[in-house]
Image 1 (cartoon, rainbow, N blue to C red):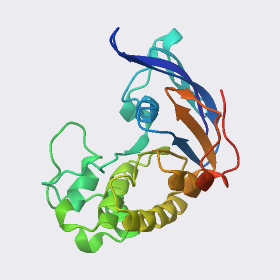
Image 2: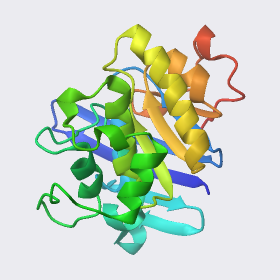
Image 3: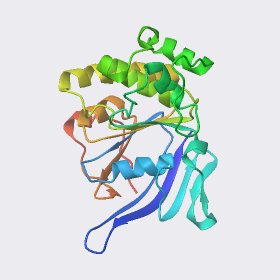
Image 4: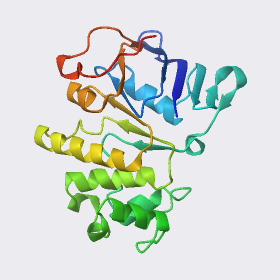
Length: 237
């Protein structure tokens, strides 16, 4: 499946205004949106997810148009069926691993029961080797277990694609390297398209089958960092 994006979004006021204006298409299994802080990466990911609406333009996934300003079409985030992994994982501290994963299956904000049982929850607990910690809360988990819990929550609804928001930025360098390897194994396991945003050239080199270099709200064709030059090609407008 592919993303095809041609959008514009402005935020701020007359004194300080930021405009994201990008056009690209990717059919890769793994796409990395790379750029410095303030480039518009998170805004772009939120637009793909349906958490933020562009001012104008069009977004499609495969043959399905999910946003089109000319047609007044804006598919709600839940109906897009994309899994979203937040930068800090956004696990609920008062809920167990099992409840955090099951939360994605519920509508509204009512917490799942402590003994919630669902075939999808059980599948991802087993697949990510979280069964032994299913009753534990996030503060009792290792970094890898927290990441796997957040990813299981993103996957339990059988999403069509994964959207990852700086998944390693909050980790120390040693843990970051381990988590890249673990994430790589998990992605091989789930086999669905992934879009990741990052400002780290090592993430780009590790995951970027297709790359989009974003700077100041636009796609740039400036040279990539040395660590990322093994990536096949850079998309341009």
